[in-house]
Amino acid sequence: MLVAVSIFASCSGVRNCRAPELDLPASIAGNTADSLTAADIEWWKFYGDSSLCRIIRKTLDNNRTLLQAASRIDELQELYRVSKRSMLPVAGVNIGANYETNDYDGDSPSRDPEFNLKANISWEADLWGKLNWAKKDGLAQWQASVEDWRAIRITLIAEAAAAYFRLIALDNELAIVKRTLINRSEGMAKAKLRFDGGLTSELVYQQTKVEYATAAAMIPNLESRISMTENALSLLMGEYPGSEYIERSDSISDMTVTGDIPVGLPSQLLLRRPDLRALQQKLKSSMAKVGVAYAERFPSLTISLTGGFENDDLSGLLKSPFSYVAGSLAGPVFQFGKKKARYKAALAAYEQSRLAYEQGVLSAFKETNDAVVNYRKARETAALRTDSRNAAKEYVRLAELQFKGGSTNYIEVLDAQRRYLDAQINQSNSVRDEHLALVQLYKVLGGGWKD
Image (cartoon, rainbow, N blue to C red; front, side):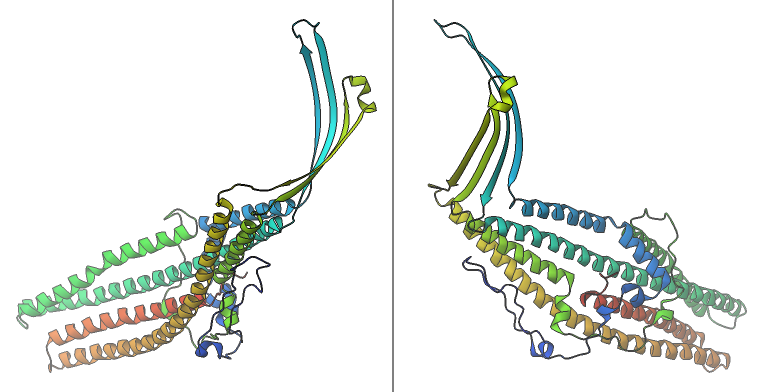
């Protein structure tokens, strides 16, 4: 079990660079839970619902944010290739011709033509490791972009799944309200007949009208929320709102998760989270920048070789070989502390990256523990809400029987129906919350970025 997170063994001569070490809580560091976790399950197997899988696949194929992140990977990959090739010699070919006429006072005009064909090669000796650090910086930035892309995938999958479950819950709530409206419409008609026949007071009839209007007023709000949720899913999938009907299951209750979700919290699991790996690569990039800034304080050695042909007569060009070898050692003399200041700034940036990585690890453990607790409690709540709905349904049945037997008034029936409506909606929302908690748990465990 990994207890300390160590990124770099040394800083290769770069001063003041420290590897971050994190002491994990005993409850986590000592956890020897089964290595199989929900994060090891591919997303299409984890969610299972075919309609949801189609939505997620469209999201991963068309979402503009994810495509932008993929393009960023290509950019940094090419920049990494540039940094690698900076360590190689630079070769070039020069072909030149000039024709100069001189007419000085007192002298006859003279002509001075020159033709040349030269090849040159130059190479900067990496005496202090500047080019090597620059290459490491490019590699770390490229790998960080890959992890950022994976983290975006996880976020998009979670957002798509959460919106899908909210949409099903809204559909279910709308269906509940419409069924209730049918029952209340029938009850209102019966109450009017009793009122017109003088069997009940107007109070009962007006109360049935209030209950009917209250339920009917819920429909526009639900339809509006359904439309906005569909629009949100269309945006995730990279499509225009309303361009096509979003297929989904009939009821979220049919998708209730059974059994325990394998969680497991070895520290290696959280270190596999793409967002943490991205922070790790950014930390490596910051340290590489420190190395570059440190090496730039010293002179650089450049060796150049030029060879070819040079003549003032084109016909004799290839008979006049030319060669030139030079080496230059250049370094700052008076920079007035600018190089040193850049080095200190790079050290400060490295310290910020180190602290950001440590904070990211701590936040990951908090998110995971919160998600585990939230999911377990959401399951308990869903079970209790189901019991409450069943009890409310029985309450309605008994109230109607007592009303028909003349032992209670219709107000009691209306109260029972009102409680049953609330219980149905609460139960549907509790199942939704259970699924949303499961989505969050899968996300914080780092599941969903693998195909």
